Length: 51
Image (cartoon, rainbow, N blue to C red; front, side, top):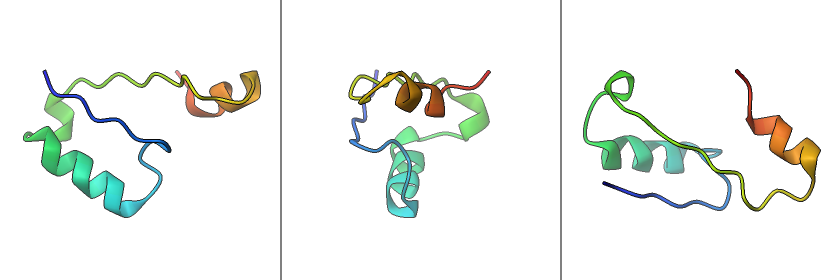
């Protein structure tokens, strides 16, 4: 299992590129889990979760 922690998710192109390199496979073949633990309030959490 690989773990990548960021303070802002994949907000910058540099972090996105690092994540894809770290992934080691095509994004459509991957599973990722996003855990918004540092959100200031419920609205901040809702900003990132959409289904």
